[in-house]
Every structure is written in C-alpha cells, then in structure tokens.
Image 1 (cartoon, rainbow, N blue to C red):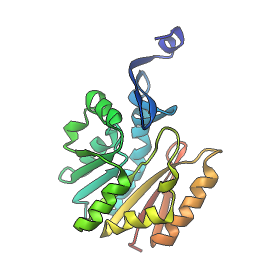
Image 2 (cartoon, rainbow, N blue to C red):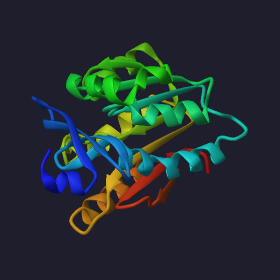
Image 3 (tube, rainbow, N blue to C red):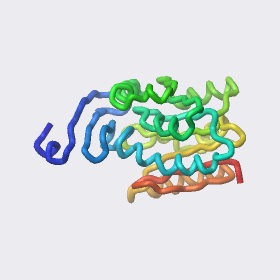
Image 4 (cartoon, one colour):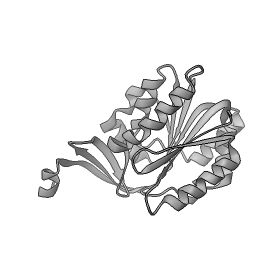
Length: 220
C-alpha cells in the first residue's frame, strides 16, 4: 500500500487478472468499506451498493401490495446487491448470473453474498435468458447491471436484448437497468432510454450519484 493510499484511508486487499474484466481489485476504504473494482469503477460493495439503494426502495413502494417472489440479478458481480434484495424481500428467491468467476469468488470471500441465500450461476446473460425462455420461467424483478469494467457491452444496449429481458418478466414484473450518466455517458444513456420506451409501457428514471436507473414495467 502506498503512502497516498494510507493517508486516504484506502487499503488494497487483493488483486487478480480476469479474462472478462481485466484487473479486479478488492479495496477497503474508510468511507465506503469494502468494494470490488474493475475498469476503475466499483462493481460491487461500497459505492456500488449505495447506487442501488434508491431504485430498490422505489421498487419496494411500487410492489408493496404484491412483493416479488423471485428476483433475477443479471451482472451479479460480487453480490453486494443481493443483501439489499434480501433485506427488502426476505422471502424472495434470488438468482444471480455473472460471466466472471473471479468477480463472484471475490464477492463470496469479501462481501459474503452466500449469506443472502442467492443462487449464483457463472454464465453469459444472453445464454441464460434464452435458456429461461425455453423453460418458460418468469421473474417478478430483474436487476440488470451488465458492466464489463467501465462500460456496458454493446449487445446489452440493443432493442433485441431489452425485448429478451421483457420476455422473461412476469406480467406484473419490473426490470431495473443501470447506466452511468456522467458527461461522457449521457448521450448513450438517453438513447438507451428511448429503446426502453419502445418496449415497456412505463419507464421511470431515478438518479443516484453519477448513474441513472431506469425502472421499467408494463403496469400503467
């Protein structure tokens, strides 16, 4: 740990190179606690956890009379979100999908996602969705956080992908999509919002930190 890290209250706990995300770093900070970083951004724990607090609170309000029985997290990463889901919906089944085994391994070790009761599969999200469609399974809440490093792969910004997510939602289900909304990301996020509006009856945006979260449903 460098002198700068020490003075900033920042300690690197572990690093490992991933074929998916490049260098993954587990960091402990005085302000945010333990976070898992890739591409210079927190992917799970710490600030990443705070970003999801606001949209999940909004979803809880919307689903107060009909809470989700199952929750799918596409882009499970280190699983920090699974603890929040468990807190809001204690009886819900939680399924986590992530393509990066190192990210999931670090989450198990440092963020204790197993305590949430989530069932995690190491699998490409698109393959999982196609498998789910064939099985006829549906989800009441789908959280989509499909970052690789600092960006969302192009295949997850398409009309085809959004339609595939809708196809595995229950009739009264909700999907939440996470996008960065800084100066360099705003145009991409706004274009993605238009795609969502072409697929879902209702798209609501909430703004935690430097992100924008789109809460989508077919309930008017």
